[in-house]
Structure formats: C-alpha cells, structure tokens
Picture 1 (cartoon, rainbow, N blue to C red):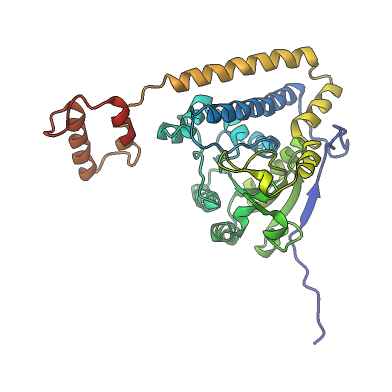
Picture 2 (cartoon, rainbow, N blue to C red; picture 1 turned 135 degrees about the horizontal axis):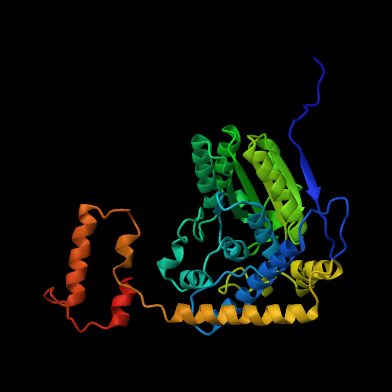
Length: 375
C-alpha cells in the first residue's frame, strides 16, 4: 500500500492584531467599547506599577522572594478579561494582572509574597485558585476543575496558566491529555517568556512552536502575540466559546518576554544579553496599547496622569493595609479542612494552651515575633 499523508482535523494558527507601533489590523480588531479599552489599559498599568512596587518592597526586606511579571501583563490580563465570573481562573505566579482584574485585593497578594497563608485564600464567591508555584501543577488542577464543570453541566470553563518551562514537565502532558481525552471545557495558556530561569526556549523543546503540541493531543492550538492585549483577548474568547459549546480544550501559546528577573534570587545578566532584553522592550505591551487607545480617542496624557496618581494611591494604601495586618496565630488550623479533624482539634487546644502560658514549660511571656514564626 502506498504511503499516505495523515490529515489532522485540528489546526494551529498564529495571531497578532496590534503591532509594536500600536497599529491595528482592522480586519482582526475585536469589538471593544471605549470603557472596556480604558479598563484594559488601567489593568495593564496597575499590574506594572504593582510589580515595580513589589520589587522595591523586596529589596527593602519588607517581603520575601518575589517573581515579577514585567512585560507579561497582557498575556495574563487578556485571558482574564475574556472569561466570566463563573469561570475558573488557575494561575501560576506571573499572573497578577489577571488576579487583580478578577478582584483579588492587592493587599492579599502582598501578604502571600510576605509568607502569610491568608494570601492563599480566594475572596468569597470567586472561582479562583491562589498563586501556585510548583511548575505545571496548574494544568492538572485545571483539568480536574474542568472535569467537574462538565459533570455539573454548568457551562463554566477552566482557564489555567503555565510557563514555557512547564511544558517539559509530566504534569503538563498528563493534564492536557486528560483534558483532550475527556473533551473538557478548558483553556491552557502557556506564557512563553523565552526563558525557564536560565534555560532558553530553544533548548526547551525541538518543536518549532509550543502551540503545535496541541496537535499531539487532538486539540486546537494557537500561537498568539502575548504582548498584544487584543490578540490575547481574541484568542481566549474563541477558545472559551469553543470550550463552552462542547468543543473541548484549546492550547494558547502566548509569545512574550520576561523583561525582569526570574525571581529576586536570580541574576539574568549571567545568561542573557542586554541587547536581547532591549529588543523585546521595544515590544512592550503597555506602550503599544497606549498608542492604540490614544489613536482611538480613549485617553490623553492628562487622563493618564490622573490614572497614574490614582494607581499610586491605591498601591500605597494596599502596602499600608498589608503591613498593618495583625496575624492570628491560630489561622493555620482553619485552612486545611472545612471542619477540624479530632487530631487537629487536639493540636489546636494544645497550641492555645501554649499561647496562654497554661502549658507547663511554655512561658506566657513568649514574644509575639517568636510565636509568629510558628505561623
């Protein structure tokens, strides 16, 4: 029998709508109101200024190690904008733009980076998971949630994020395969920021694109310009509509760049050049979107100055709220289960006795700072 080319029903596309100079492809331009464009720009700017403030706080020793998202704001905000309140948001740790858009109090994110587990508590009524660092675990969580959504028949979609380095983890492949095999309502966003700490994208995989990995699992893939907020909104909307209508999952490769450090424990100058960074800085997602909305008559320089002042005040208020937070030393006992198990209740009683000094050998005068270390 002659050889035959296998025709695949699924596709992989590339999408860019807004170029580096803010010029738009009118044929692909999504329909967004001026209010929506204004809100999207504020979301990008808020995430950038939050990121900058968090870096300063870390350098001042006021929070722990921090993983910035400088340059990747659109890759997180676009997808968050494209889903509804009833959909599920499953972040990694470079999605503050999406988390703030979803309604997470900024002070709660700051508490997380300060080591307080209260920061892992989603606001009441939100279908969100907290910041999660273990690489690629988000894809398995997202697949499990999407499976639950399908069984419930509630038409909700799970949106999960992972980095390009995470696509080499078993969790990624197991999660995508599960989502594809069971036709789950899931959208997977790979933030391809070109570097998995010090390993460049070219050494991560032999695939020409990350998006094409979708074909191996029998789902659609799209490579979107991750620094183009319009492309990210459009790609995610299409993927969400497909998932919600029973068409299964989609893999979105958001091509972006980590302009800053991997975390504040990292020195990128040891593995990449300044010339590379500057080339990507010219593609900054905020700068190009700013040019676009100016051309659309959404905002002018004076309006931006006002917005900048409002954001500065908002961030300062969040820092003050974070640093004035009084931690309850018994909080850890209330995070594991809806109702404490008998063993946990026993430990809780013992700990309360320790705090009150009723436990022999546990001085009542123990400093609050020492006790807080137990938290």
